[in-house]
Amino acid sequence: MTDLRESLLQSARRAVGKARSVGGVSGCGYSLLVAALRPGWRGQVCVVTPGPELAEHLMLDVQSLVPGLPAFEAPLLEPASPDHLSTWIALLSALHAAPREQAVLVTPLAALLDALPAPEAISTASVVLRPGATLKLEEFFRRLTDAGYERVDE
Image 1 (tube, rainbow, N blue to C red):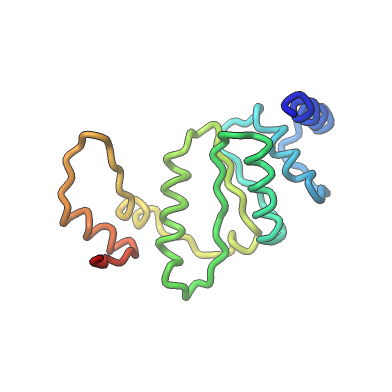
Image 2: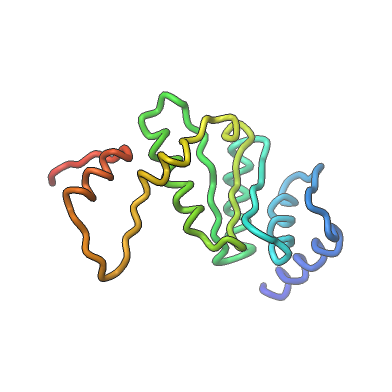
């Protein structure tokens, strides 16, 4: 299976050459091109799809074609959704933490029209946990609730 996959990716690389953008692709061609072009990336890549269904299919295909590639899907949420801000902050924080040269963000076009949180809001809401570090629980819980999480007792 690996030989077939590599052969397919090499053929796609040769067909595209050094192009920085590609259009007119349909079906699994999107996924194949993203996977094939990955070795030549300089920085993180954003792939825009016409709709959310194709974004979801592309994510699944790319994860199969390039195991281990950090891939993220931009959410398509109603602005009035209570999870809107916290979902975007979580996504952008994860993307920021991903290796700069290897991550891909897949987004439906409509998600790009969404208002994103200000960079200050993302920095303020981001919490970095490190093994062995001391954590002030009350401050940690406050930051989580400020980011949109709800504290519940079990």
